[in-house]
Length: 72
Image (cartoon, rainbow, N blue to C red; front, top):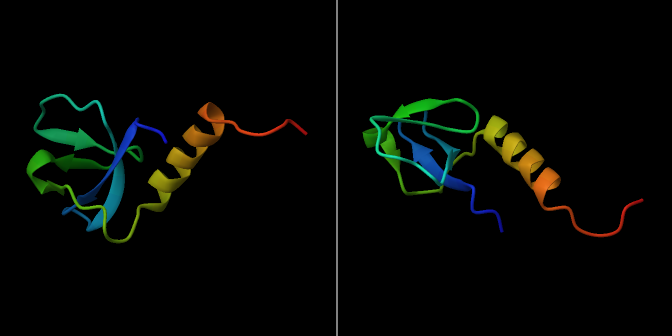
């Protein structure tokens, strides 16, 4: 499991985005896809349509940092 990302719903575009888990106090937060959201528009729900760009970015991160199995 990768602890770098937290999936949360943006009420700006009603999509679930990957936000970094090391958030510091701020008025805006930025998703992996660079979608910027006011902190009061982010909810702790991960139900809904996922952002395709965030899925690809997180997938690439997992492939690079969590390789499993034998090399071909």
